[in-house]
Length: 66
Image (cartoon, rainbow, N blue to C red; front, side, top):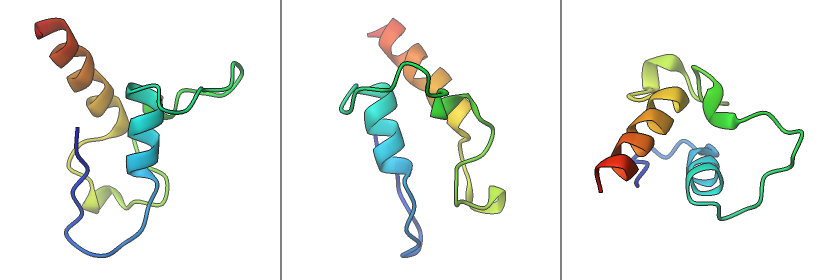
């Protein structure tokens, strides 16, 4: 799992991926799934290769195949 930035723009993608996919930080029971959205918070759609939903689907496929 990796998040690569082509510039020095700061965002929370790495934290969201780690907590949502790897269980690094327990999610609150009533909190919405951050990977259920079509955009990353604080990231322009023009600067996005994979949306949060696509990341989650890719991760689920990887886990199913391995």
